[in-house]
Image 1 (cartoon, rainbow, N blue to C red):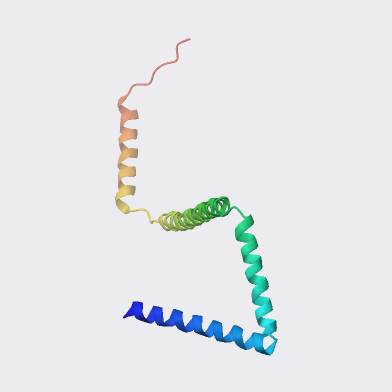
Image 2: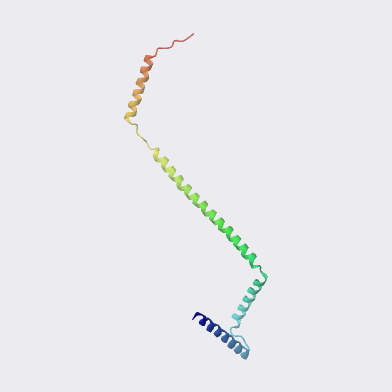
Length: 135
């Protein structure tokens, strides 16, 4: 069915073209002259480009340029992600350091330990004889 539609459409376009050219030759003027002249110029320009430009080299250069741009964009995005992670970690470290430097009240057990050490030290001084100065 799709083939039949395509064939009928092609035949309709061919018949329409033949009728249009016959009408224009009898009348002696082109219908929609300005638009068709513009279209003819664009088709001529595209034909000239297709004949004189090396499309393989052009496509190769465009793919190379696209790859270079893509690589640059990926590197830029990864750098932004690394910087964002760095800022996050810096804030986290700053927060953790400031939280652990809070005032911690000394415990009574620690003071008792220091008193015990001081007593022990004074007892040691009492048990050791004094060394006389050698002259």
